Length: 365
Image 1 (tube, helix red, strand yellow):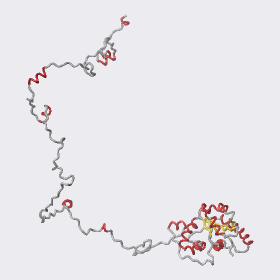
Image 2 (cartoon, rainbow, N blue to C red):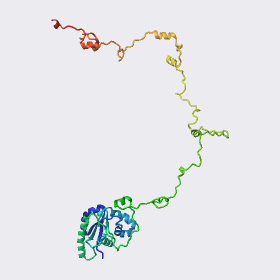
Image 3 (spheres, helix red, strand yellow):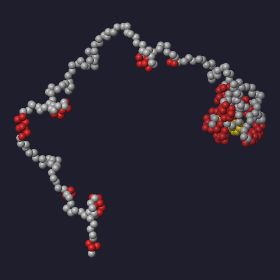
Image 4 (tube, rainbow, N blue to C red):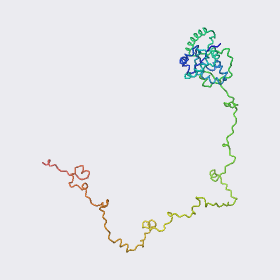
């Protein structure tokens, strides 16, 4: 009968948090086995398929490898064999109550059933049998010691697949050039046949796609007008019109707004000619003609002489501001000086007047 154990693989970043994961599971699980595993492809492809035999049989080979292979091969993973302290199913308890709380440490893989956990333990720790409890304790202590020595080593080399595993890989994952260079795997050189065209990624033969109709040669050539013929330096082909002049039918636009506005008899006072001809002044007459304007004979000479020769009434502008500004107003600051200032040499030089040298009376004495 299989023991009540579960195999847990801490992948990628979770492998660095092994101590924290064990502390979180200390109340419900006890550590039975522990080791560090480094899986590289394609050398350890059989080992990876043996660990994921249940997933390959359940989900399918392609789906299982796509889901778990990148996580197992990205970095060294830490493998733990845990035993449940109670009598419940260890795998079911771990997946139901503890797996979701451990997602913060990184991706974690757990065996789905007891039989799968026992098979994985046998695959990873082939030196340990399924004997009595005392043998299990002794093997547990020895395995812990070997696990410490293995952890101190730089890497772990997977063992060969046991004969009990009968599943064989049907397909091998295709490595890219970058992955092959990182793993040091030489890729075979591909020499495509010169006679065959490279097939697309889908594998289906590529059909001939006709050109779009917008790029085809037009079946009907466009008619060239006179401007197009002149641009192409071609003579214009004027065709004489055989048909007579087309008779156009008269259209009644009497009820159509906006038509025949020139025929509407509308009179606008602002645009009508003036009823009284304006009297021309001398300036307007000089603008209209170059001859000297004649004196208008409409006004009699007697009335003109009476209007010109009559006395004018005096208007008092004393209270009107701004009038008679030309009145002489004496401003003291604008008057010439009463005492002529004495000129020194500098002022005389500026006014270009000859300097008068006067002898000091002290020198005379």
